[in-house]
Image (tube, one colour):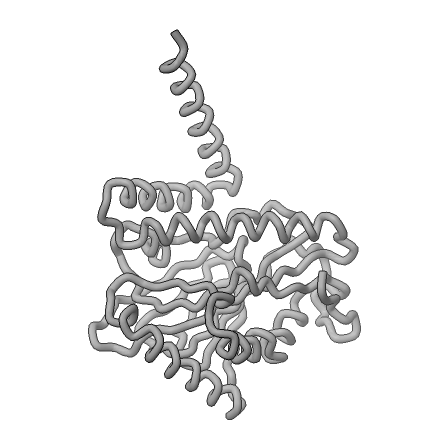
Length: 280
């Protein structure tokens, strides 16, 4: 891990790192932070003008953006305002590593189209690795531009928030059941936010921490690829993947291993069918 949370700076929370990280609301108040957010919003509106005019939402990995923009985003995702709120609520001596390769710029239109974006309105967990006892992923939702017409409900933490510009929320990526309430208002302000992820591992996790990083990276990339492919689906294949995303999302609520078992069973079924077809 690249950093260790100082035992003198950590809060009073103790116990396993696998316990729920409670949803936490914050806000950037410093004038320099707000100026930075305003500048990033203006850049997004100019650079993604075409995407902003379309209904489908748009996810872009931060690391693919111009270096000067990534440097500005770093000032937000590495901000002491966020770090200190995380430190207060995890065990002292925990490993702490920003997962910048998974961070995204998100232009959100909240589509109810049974495709990849449907999950915003459905009750869901973002990830399915909540059975890992040695780690957690804390996700920061940093709102560069938003009004209060949508509310995010964090069910496990019993927290609700209609996020506006300069707000941010921290949630447990794998363990917080949450959803969005509200309706799209044509002509309303664009909703632009950053999704930044931080891996926290138990003190002395060692190899388990490295495994957690690899496992989380795989989950991020596979799930994101499937959701992007099925977003606002038009072709039969896109619609099929979209329905599978929604099905696995519901199965994940039952237990995180259920969708993995379903995938394994499907793969075995396909293999058996292929063997039967090609075997004389």
